[in-house]
Each structure stands twice: as structure tokens, then as C-alpha cells.
Image 1 (spheres, helix red, strand yellow):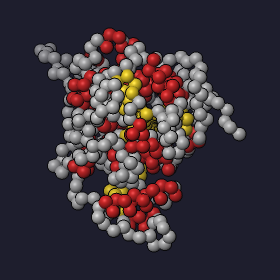
Image 2 (cartoon, helix red, strand yellow):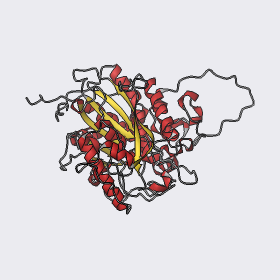
Image 3 (cartoon, helix red, strand yellow):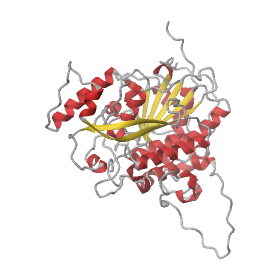
Image 4 (cartoon, helix red, strand yellow):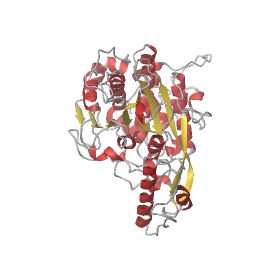
Amino acid sequence: MASKINDSSRPLTSVSRLSSQDARSAEAKTRNRPIAWKDGFESSGARPAAKLPQLPAPPPVLSLPPPATTTPVPPEAPTEPPVSVDSDPMKHIEYLSSDALQGRDSPSAGLDAASAYVQAHVQKYGLVGPNSNNPENPFQQKFNVYSWLGADKAGEAAGAAHAGHKQFGHQTFQEGFYLDEKMPKDTLKLLNQQYEQTMKAAGQTAVPARAGKQRGVEELKQVATATGQAVNTMAMLPGTGPHKDEVIVVMAHLDHVGVDRKGNAYNGADDNASGSAVLMAAVPELAEAAKNGKLDRSVLFVWTGAEEKGLVGSQYFVDHPIPGVELKNIAGVINTDMVGRWDDQRLSVVDTNTKGQPNYFRDVVDQANQQLADPFDRINRDINVYRDRQDGASFGRKGEDVLFLFEGLSNPEGGGDLIPEYHRQDDDIEKIIEDNGGNKPRRVKDLLLNVINIAANRTTEPQPK
């Protein structure tokens, strides 16, 4: 495990900011107005075709009607969109939560298309694929997803199955899991327990182990159903300083819950196109910082799959480290999940360890917030109950310092309920616009940039001998 982070930071040159933070004071006056072209948001209809791999481009969601003209205009040569457009999370939310991606179930063609979209974006800014274990595509880590044979309701589609799930997040392997011969003993033990609990809840008898108290991987495969192959998407931004071998892991789950029996998509704009888009939007500015030598540690972006099955993708990543990103190399983990809704002045975080004690991110978040031109009014620490129900928990159980960024609950001062649309078909981009005009995910991106900048450039204490 990488050396822990000291609370005393060295002088930093701030990561460059775009107009979203430079003009924050003026923006605050119009925080809830609808998105318009002058906000720097470009509709999916204006993107190059190469940006929409594998599936057809979604229909424009927020495009304004084209201006009337009586003079023929010659076609212009295609150009790359400006960095300011790529740095707007709303651009990426629009695509990731479009009907064309059919709810991004794990596994599905929609999730594969989302992965390809993310990969095209990070490659544009020079990030590298770090998974040398998958030479065919080092930007991906693939794994097979299973469910328990006979434990699920026959014919129930993913979206319909999740419609009744109203408690935020999942326990590990709650509704799905992976199986392979390389899985650690503690993961295999957990999976045996989950199998017994699942069969009991379904009123069925668990198949006993052939020998000993625990079933092996092959035994579990015989009582499981393979549902397909899911994917973690990842990209490395190498650091340039003396601690470049240490890694800050920044993650969000890319999947959602698919479609219902009638084929209606659960688009998951907030859950979790918003968190995935915030990561994507942070890439251009962080890449520029690294180019200018302002990023000491490396940053690994991970968009996990099968989170909605039970944190499967993050657990697979922890159990199957990619070369150079073993646990000993990790110097902090940041997970971003559901950051689009409510007003744009509240946010909730988890910055404690498994014993409920603050980790080093407690001071980092407060410092990062104060660096904003318009700091969040309320950073609530009211969601510790969710600490073990989000992807960061897979790392937290291994002793890593984890920060979880979340949009908050219904009470602005802390506490309350989830958004009413959680795991419903109306979790669409329009709800984000109604709540805050798209400024919430933009502001979370600005805060995330500050958090990464501080964490990646902090001084370290000597390792104990």
C-alpha cells in the first residue's frame, strides 16, 4: 500500500480552470436557468460520428432548432469540439443516458457502447490503457457475470427486477457475482455465504459442498447461471513527479439496470451517468496539468461495470490488480456516484474508514471546497450508512482511504430521502436540468479537480520500517 498522505500540503500551482469556475460569481445569479448554447453545452447532434461507437447516435435531447436561412451554406470540414465542450459533464450525461444505450445493463451492448465512448474520449487526451493483462484492449478489464441458478424470478428483465430496489447501493454480490480460479480465498468464502443466503431467501435448498465446509469455484459454477461478460473501463494519466509510481484511483460505475419487460429503458441519468460524466469532464484539465508537470502522482480513472449487480466490477478489480496498480501503489480512492440532482449548493460525502474515523480526505475535501470561486454552502456528512454500499467499499475493506462523493439527501441541511426517481424510468437528464440547470454536476467536477490536485500533489510521511 502506498505511503499515507500527510495533512500538510506543499505550495501548489492550481490546475487551470475553465469558464465554469472563473465566472462562478456571475453564474450563481442564474444557477437554475435552463441550459442554452451560451452555457458551453453542445447537443449530441453536433458531435462527430466517431464519438458514438457501436450504437446509433441518440436523438438530440436538448438541441435548439436550427436557425432559418435562405442562403445555401457550404459544408464545413469536420473539426474537433473545443476542450470547453468536452469538459462539460452535461454533454456526456446526454449520451450516456440516451435511449440508444438501453439502460447500460451488465452485460449488454449498451454498456459496451458506453465503454467505447469513454475510451475514445480518454484517448483523445493522451491517457493510456494500463491493463497489460488484456493486450487486445488495455483500456478494458473483462469479467464474466453470474447469477444463482433458479434463485431469480424466471423471465424477469433487469429493469423490472431493480424497480423495487429503493435502498441506495448494494452489498457485495447482492444480485450477481464473478467466478474464476484466481479469486482470493476471502472472496470465495463470501460467495459461499451469499449463495446460501440467496437460496434460503428464495425458499430453495443449497447444494452442499462435496468436501469440507466450502464449495470450490467449479462447484459454484454448477449451481450458477452465466449471464454474460461485463467490463471495467480504465485509463491512466501518468504522474510526472517523484511519487509517480503511486496512484490516485478515481472511479464511477458506468452501468445501470437495463430495460423492463416491454423494452423500456431505465436511462439512469443521475445513477450513474452523472458520476461517469464528471470523471470524463475532468480528463481534459487534468491532462493539461500533467503535461505542464503539475501532477506528482498518477491518476487512474476506472468506470466500473456490474455495480448494480452488487459491486461486482470494483470487487473484481481489487481481486485482480493490473500491473503497477497493486494495493501497495494506491494512495487514495475517490468514488463518484449520483451527483446530478437537488440544488447545486449541497453535497454529501463519506470520508471515514470502516471504524467510522475520518481519513485523510476529510481535510482534503474542506480545502478543495474553499478553493472554489463559489464554495458549496453545505458539505454534509450524513450518508455513512451507505459507506459499504458503494464501489469504494471494495477498496475500504482492504484498508485504503476512500472518499465517496454523493449529491445529498432531500433535506438540504442533511438527512432525508433519496431522489424519488431512484431506479425508476424517469431518471432522465431533464430532471437534472429542472433541479439546477446542469450546474450541480459541473460544480462537482470543479470540486473533484481540486480534490485530485491536492491528493496527487501532497507530501508523504516516510514508510514505517
